[in-house]
Image: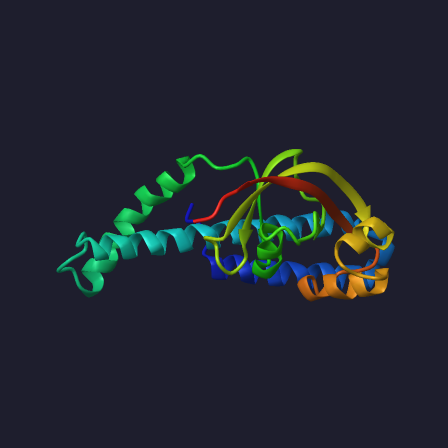
Length: 208
């Protein structure tokens, strides 16, 4: 079965969100909001992982060009050779040892953490399967920006029940401001949606 492209997955996610919203508008509390969010989050994670792999693939192919591996190959021939290398590269990517888990994080927030001034908690929409132990934060725009932390606690709550300790750690004075900021990342976030609260401590720097 042919793997779906990033564009196909993004379209699928858009359609899923539209379908979930229509179902919620029609049936409301009869539905399980947690299950709907979990499916959206799982699809978003799949897109994020594919974006990272494609970025690494493109960088590797560019390196091949610089060292002359694709020298003399133009147009379709070069592209076909790149595609042949793609399957081997994907295998290398999949086999490369990675931390058990990773999350994308806004570059500015990640730099703040690296600088020692950042928060020690992050909140994500939906129920995320995050385990205690090592976690690698990866810059959402610059994937070479990486920082390793140690997850110390994970909580699952409705966003309306997020405590003041989290709100203050995120840099907000009240729940409303915190909620409005979360909606910048998750425009369809409802007050009853479940979120994953991840507490962490600094473990080690992983930059490239």
